Length: 393
Image: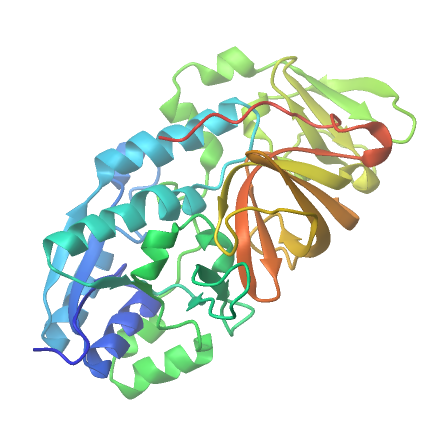
């Protein structure tokens, strides 16, 4: 009988999840390793070089760790669920003129659910991952008492709390994140000390796992035959947010192939920096502007998941992030039913509908949701695309 019980550890084959399994094994848990097969690279039609978290090499790397330490390892095929939820959503969001975040969606709707279902079958009390974040149960007797929250990892450069805002209370109560109190440099040192030098030298992947060549435009074209012909030829509009003047300055290749804040790859030159400031699907327009035109001081967020509180009863001061590497901006949030209105202390650049907004109180994740639209208070709340966000199944 193990010291701490049986635990199912998600292992991608990389250094982080491998060390998570190693540390839990050393701590006395009965570890079972699980590598999830989310995507068949050959079906993407792009690069045939499998370098992602579910490549054959990565699966073998995870299995080798398990064999060396003497614990079981299994492969969990979730390609069908992944395709139905993550891939279809990824494609659909771009077709709606939004910029999706598939990693958040995968964590929320695919990986945790799949791991917990398999954990139950294997009589595992809990699951673990190699994310750089912490989980704590609030015990201060306040309004959040008894709730489980994600909080920032100690390594600010590697903190992954942003991508975990969607994990439910039930899932958090059964999850362990053994790397949250460690820095990346410590992980490398621990792997070296234990003789896992191949993990230290293995390159890390920062690409979307199902777009291994990092060419999402090519992926969309292969996924949606005829897309180029359907969306090409719309107007580039140069728009001044101060004066409201608009001018047609060229033709674009199709609105799904651009993102808010994009500067490179526009195929049009002005002699000064110009950025994509808005994408308007209905008119097939891509709006351009200078740096100041990117800034908004508010946004609306929907499809919420609140971790620290059951609801936001009154305006709450937070630090709000609008993208993964965003350091965050002070903001006041107010909840109205299933939506949250965010008012920033200062303007925030390149807020992209479809991305996740995550609200922090200190190091704790209050919760998050999906950005519907952003606005300038001086001009009303409909400056950017404000399409209703569809439910995710």
